[in-house]
Length: 133
Image 1 (cartoon, rainbow, N blue to C red):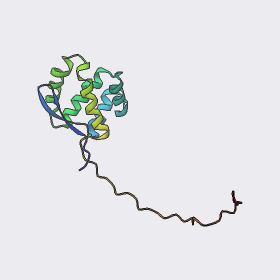
Image 2: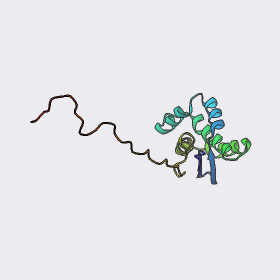
Image 3: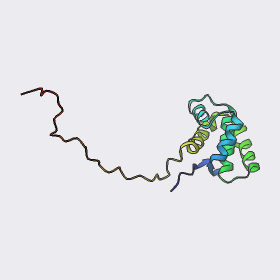
Image 4: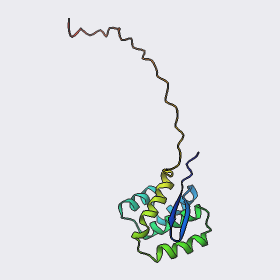
């Protein structure tokens, strides 16, 4: 399964799918005048801007299938009419999934590299004097 950066969360009045794909991240970057990992860090450490919170949630809703008009209405109702702290961790979860993939997604594990035999013989002499007789 590929890591498509989507995450489903209980938020506002129901359960919504959020996804920050490449296009949404680019629009978010432009709206917030910061790169995705800068926004992620600001959300993590609490130095975020209001636009970080509302933008992540709005673009996450759009990426998750809502129209821009629907997403804007939901953000106005459940983000902009509420204290910022109520949605900071939601925005962080959406942004983290967008930057690194959702934690519940399965990652294909590559098989370990085959053991390579050493080209140095354990009985080969190094040319150094022996430390003990």
